[in-house]
Image 1: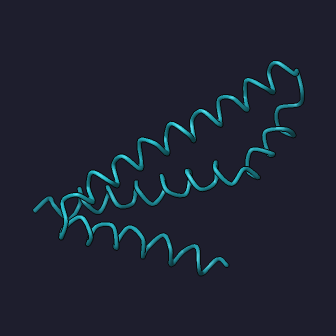
Image 2: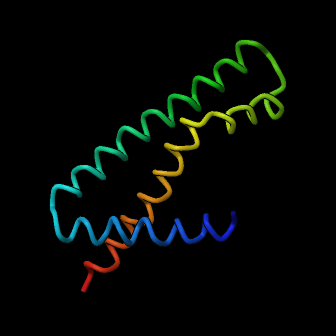
Length: 95
């Protein structure tokens, strides 16, 4: 599983970089995906923290339930891949 995660973090940003070089539309699609992901990711995180504060529960115990939310994990994973993709774009386009 660890190898799969490492390979995915290398393959997906490279694939995104190659796709956006051939079709400019992909840049827009990747950027819209990042905007939607950051909105969902941030809202889930903030609403979970608000719920913990309102319920006056133990923060460290309850916040870990957030990591079981598949939408939170999916959007966070996309943002991680997107950041690597953007670093590739910035690095390889600086000649």
